[in-house]
Amino acid sequence: MKVINKPEELQKIIEELKKEGKNVGFVPTMGALHLGHVSLIKKSVLQNDITVVSVYVNPIQFGPNEDYEKYPRPIEKDIKVCQDNKVDFLFLPTNETLYNKNFSTYIYNNNVSKIMCGITRPTHFQGVCTIVAKLFNIVMPQRAYFGLKDYQQYIIIKQMVEDLNFNIEIVGCPIVREESGIAMSSRNTYLSKEEKVQATGIYKSLCLAKQLFCEGKEIEDIKQVVEENSLKIPNSKIDYIEIRNSKNLQEVTDLDKNIVIAVAVKVGNVRLIDNMVCEK
Ligand code: AMP
Image (cartoon, rainbow, N blue to C red):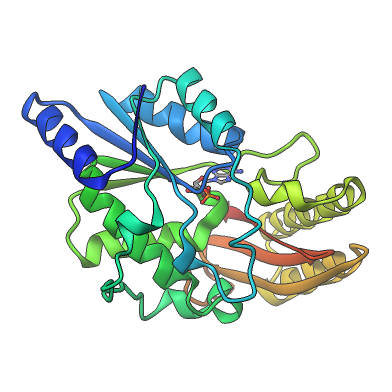
């Protein structure tokens, strides 16, 4: 595995590999790699000749009072995870190489970025779209892998690729959970032992919601049950509970057959997101 810091260096290597007819798969991450990330890497290694992983904590997707500074950065461990999983190139750019002092071009989704996480994190998806577009231009992959854990991000990236004519297949990968049911996340390291147990209530209420949906219960009733259950999680505060169309995250009616139940809940000081897709 080769570790690369400079965008131009990676671009050159990829250009050469493409001339040789190689397929490139790309897994963008913020590091602190866990088995959720590994599932994306494994899929890319399986489906492509070359796999590029990026580890970069992107400052412009964090709000002013968020955890940019304290976000975990166990880089030696991440390098080992990539090596162990047959990654070909690990891209570790710096803020200086990606955002020079004249940087002034951003990508903004004018629809789905305004709901759900976009309400409490109004500049988040602009930061995500901008960095992902930059990384796509550097890595030039045929396929890019995104976890359904960040469901809204997945939908927004798919839309960006369509709107801006990126010739890249976006591959959505299922949520990897801990045995307790909580979705794996780099931010789980912020949770105390007790909070980790409390957080399992999120998964439990999503499972219950799925069951109610399959039984034909009305959307509003399902939402209420999820809310009642989530309110029972000690030491927690609901940011949102949304039931939306799983293809485009628009509002649903009781006739919709494909929905996603998405929640954001603060357990202690840690904001967790999770979701479950249900299809009839
Ligand atoms: P992050 O490092 O949190 O920005 O995540 C990088 C990629 O890994 C994103 O596409 C995430 O959706 C994906 N990811 C993070 N956690 C999980 C998980 N538990 N299961 C599947 N994919 C995940």
